[in-house]
Image 1 (cartoon, rainbow, N blue to C red):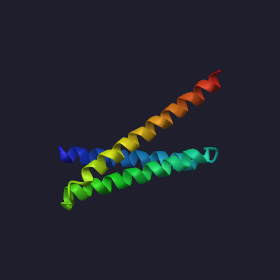
Image 2: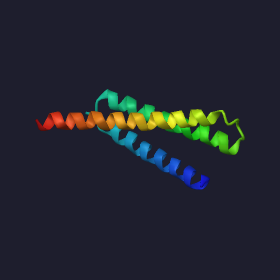
Image 3: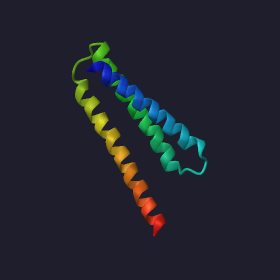
Image 4: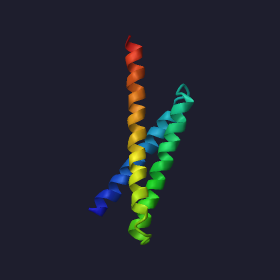
Length: 94
């Protein structure tokens, strides 16, 4: 189970790297999205480090709540960005 969990985190990291690359490639993208993409990349990297610390380096299990809180933050920010994008698309169609 841990191998699947670890591999999935690497897939998420790769996807966020790709998204960040796309955001920075387009010059017309707002600064807000550039900052959020860097924030997401940072959170995902920190999340992976905390998880690796628990799994490989026998760091105390106190990191588990931090690991879970970071995961909720990541999903929450992604959901917020989705809502913003849906609102922008809805306004553009009016």
